[in-house]
Image (tube, rainbow, N blue to C red; front, side, top):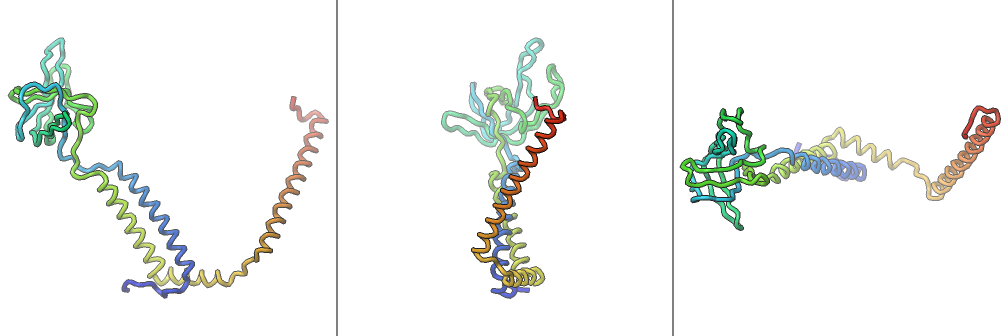
Length: 244
């Protein structure tokens, strides 16, 4: 079946309002998907390491650097390397120097106080230090904001793609069910026809019915209040209910 509206013009209002309701639900779903996609991260292709207290000459592209942590001051205070990586780019802007490195290769640390594989840079607050293998350069990485992952593409691409897919699926389903699928379209057309046969109350009848309901509700409330007070007085008189 080609694109088009099945029995165009029939069941207009029911089909239109159904499409609007489906559109609201679709947009709400897309908004929920957008929010959920904040938990999905693009692949990490590199890391930017902020360096300070720089000593020596900055490494160049392709140089290998060592990621270090302080040693045990009671045994060997010298820095202990726990991983290495190649420099992809040296970025200096606004007085801040960053080394963009590839995915590090981590080593097993056996000297005290290190007894396990060093944590992944994705989860560690920062590397404690970085030096070149030739030790012609050394620097300190701050504990806060020292390491930033570089993603393959911005996070918003994932959110926009997922939300857009939700909108596309919702819009397609709405068009198919409301506009082109004969079975559901016939149901909505018949519903519209039945709605036209409904004997709707006049404004005067609605006002009279509303007033009747309000008055009846007030009378029932007064009656129940009186009955409640009577029971309360009776039970207090026979000593069953003691509010003191």
